Length: 145
Length: 145
DNA sequence: ACACTGATTGTAAGGATTCTAATTTAATAA
DNA sequence: TTATTAAATTAGAATCCTTACAATCAGTGT
Image 1 (cartoon, rainbow over the protein chains, first blue to last red):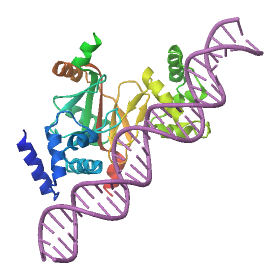
Image 2 (tube, rainbow over the protein chains, first blue to last red):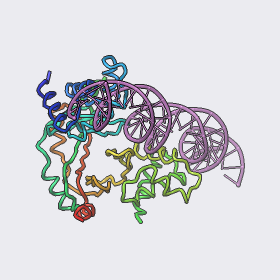
Image 3 (cartoon, rainbow over the protein chains, first blue to last red):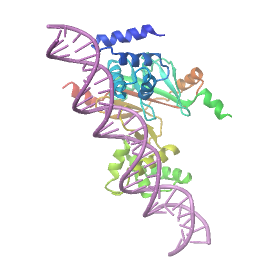
């Protein structure tokens, strides 16, 4: 699908002197096509058939590289494992407390909060994160029987 | 210090049929007097001298009880272990990316964001979380040499 | 063809958290 | 006060996620 974003990401990697190996390409492609903010293990399992010999370590290594270069963000919610999000455009997440589903939504960036926080705390603020928690539509109807 | 908040919390627990054991009391008291959002291990180590036989499992068990009852919130940042915050009044956190320090700050609650998220995602939103990341005053001056 | 650097692999190791089974204890009522 | 009982604690094993490590492999340039 998003060949353009993929090519752009590959160019960014190459520009940083990172080699494009088949495994690395596959992890990156999977992340770009995925709308579900997968965990490292989900990526590993998804690529298992294509790369039967790939190690989990490779997935983690590549995710770290992508994160350090700024291609993906690591999301740490309450659950045990990190999730990875390659949508770097400004957006926020709504998380279902019942089923764990994550839905993106847009909102004008909270610059006011950042500048107020700088004044109050003396921090030099670089970024922020925000999520709303609640019940998704499907779980709402399930709960209503 | 905050005997009032402690007594209030204990009443809440008793009202839910939770027994007040010495260990439980100590964990709760430590959390209430702590301004640093400690990890489970920090709590465990801090109470070690008073309860030499206490198990880590006890700390985790009690934190889970407190969380389920709504006395504390579990904070999951990028680092490996959860932090626990018993300040249930509305506030946000500023986190230093250099030294890990966490500073509370107040801001009018982002109700607008919650209602917009409900409209866009169809979620029934119960709450939200937000943090700003940056460099604290101390690390700023350290970096400047 | 050779050397060099980085990437991958498999496995071991680490840390945080949960589980389990046995023991102890707080709250309650007789 | 004592007996009762369900809940809480304990110690250690087990689990899960992630990282570290050493050996191997692959691509690039000389």
